[in-house]
Length: 213
Image (tube, rainbow, N blue to C red; front, top):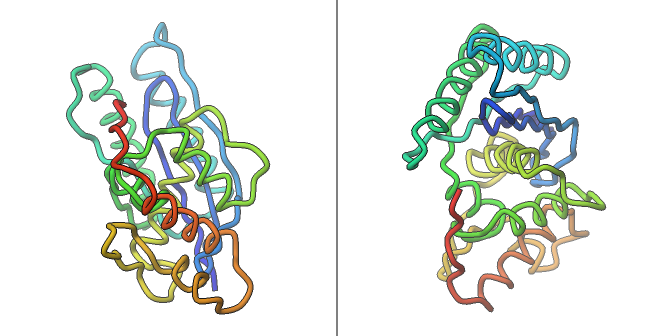
């Protein structure tokens, strides 16, 4: 059994949206990914309407079972925070109208779930997203990869797709599917290979610098 998750990396200028199907063995398949855009010269209400219409069309076309949003956090740029919060509100309203559960995930949560450590940079996250989904290239722009990472993170961290929840190893790497792959239990799915690579990479590296978003 698989679940469909719609991930949203909210923003007024660029709003990343990624939809994935995730199975109980944590393998993930790309359904759709896009970036909804508006320009700063548009009236605020029209920007909200435009992105809202785009989200609504994707929700109705793909019919996800869960919605995952990036949690708003403090930044120096107040206008950016306001834009993220406004789009988040629109997204939550649209999800609520469809009786879809919404879960907020912090950037650190997403990075830890996807790469194995919470201070990974955007390139590392994008690389892992591409590997997990079996893509030849990293989804671009970064908003698209971030939205897909949110969707995958939600399914993996909440156990929405079924199966055992990931556990945290001594090294701090979130493990589960990767550990199963390391034990050689059958053919490795893309997700299992990604988990195993994350475990090995984290064990061999020093703490990476944090990403300024």
